[in-house]
Length: 77
Image (tube, rainbow, N blue to C red; front, side, top):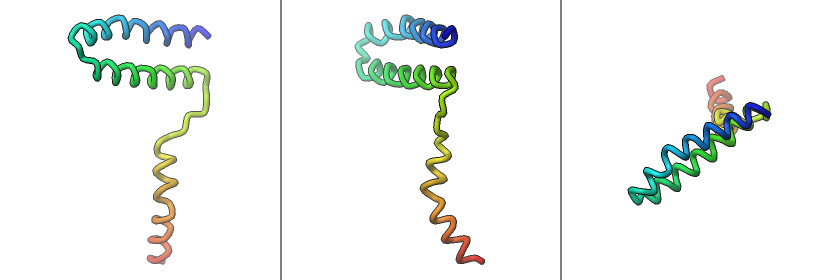
């Protein structure tokens, strides 16, 4: 519980530092991307803090390329 609160506090500090600058300079697209990435990062940090099972991107890559790898290895043997 404390870890989640700490993560949220750090995220709020980051928003308090970065968002006014982006807003003041009219960087709306950058502000949107900043918000999305911060939300994604905060969510992943919270999931890691509660020890949720987060899929590894390498698992998806392996799933896609495994049939090709098996086919090529069966041709070599």
